[in-house]
Amino acid sequence: MDFFKYANVAQIFVNTDTWYVPFIVGGLCFLIVFAFQSVGLFIISGREGYKNRWMSFIPFLNTYYIGVCGQKNRVFKSVDTKIFSLIAAIVEVLLVVGCVVSYVARFQLNAHDLIITDYSTNGYGLRFPIETLSSSIKNYPELLWAAWCFEFLDTFILSVLELAFLVLQVFNLSAFFQTFSAKRYMLFTITSILFPVQGILIFILRNNRGMNYREYVRKEQERQYKMYQQYRQQQNFDQNPYNQNPYSRNPYEGEYGGVNANGSSASSGTPDDPFSEFGGSNNDNDPFKN
Image 1: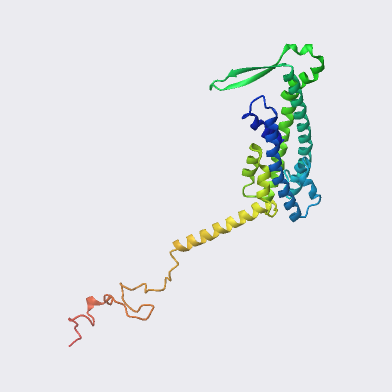
Image 2 (image 1 turned 90 degrees about the vertical axis):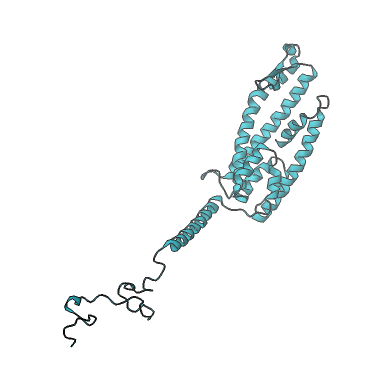
């Protein structure tokens, strides 16, 4: 399907008289990106030990082989990723065949000037074409099949197939990128869906080891939890008022004097004599002094 995406982009920059140029440009771009994807899958499958590596170089089978290389992760717990990739490959075949028939039908109708193109302007001032089938088609009974393709194949059948292929590709590529790029799998999946560059991304990841994404998430959670525990322990140690030795000083120092825990004498004086009113050794009026 990437071939038609490239062809549609190239068609914007060429004249309608040179209709074959978009197909040439689309074919060249497709071959370049497909070569990157094939080499990437071939290297990955060899390192992971998967069989039938030749599927990496065959169109449509290449889509199926993406699921083979990403089978360490399942889209759903009970559904193997290879099943989604196989269905995606079958839908891709139907979609390509339908696009080819649609293009042939359009060429036949355009050759007889049976497609009328009008332009409409939306609220933003942008013009877009509106194509309708000419009533003269009844004069060409041999082109009724082309008229049917124009009315139904393009509008309904191909749209449904394209939507189905898009959903299957999301599952297929998501499992693959979870396996070989767990940290950025969402970014790579969305980029591959929006732009036809999945082959280049697969080639970039060719040297990565495959992993189970759920196991990777579990280890990351354990690592972050250990870091959090270490942080909390360090924070509690810094704020704990009992980190210092409570016996490093005399609790009566400053009030009664005495000797400190290190053996030095206290700096304060002696306590008051409780018998001072009856006289004492420190009282000069001791009646027994004489």
